[in-house]
Image (cartoon, rainbow, N blue to C red; front, side, top):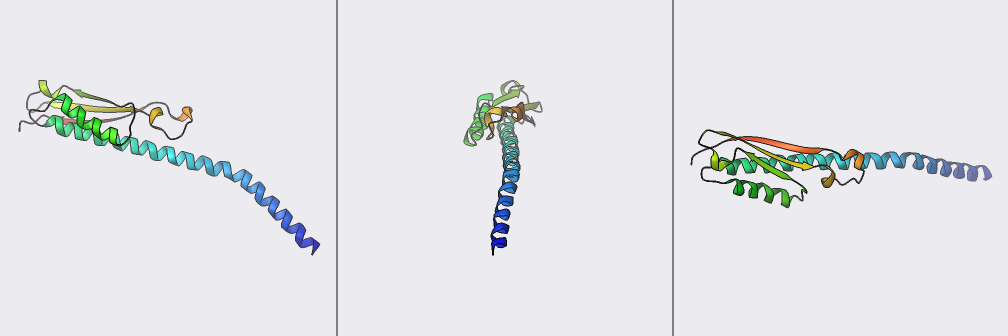
Length: 135
């Protein structure tokens, strides 16, 4: 009976040590997967906004302001912070058949869920090309 009690105490101690060793590793994997998913979501949001801005800018009679407003609405609805939208050349100055480049960028640091600044450097960018149409 005494030996059984000693075994149980030893097993409990081993379980506590295993938890102390494994818990930081599990927490690190959880945070890394959250950060990766956030980056993928941010990249897809930028690409969607660039595509929608290109769709608007390619139509005849549309302006830079309307294309930028469409992309801004998408990014704002997805809570993307600090984004920038550029359209070159502007839809107003393009003639039919001209290729426009729509670029949407956002910093990783202001759109991260993990507060570690070492891994949140740089900006993500999405670029879409569109041909001006005359509709």
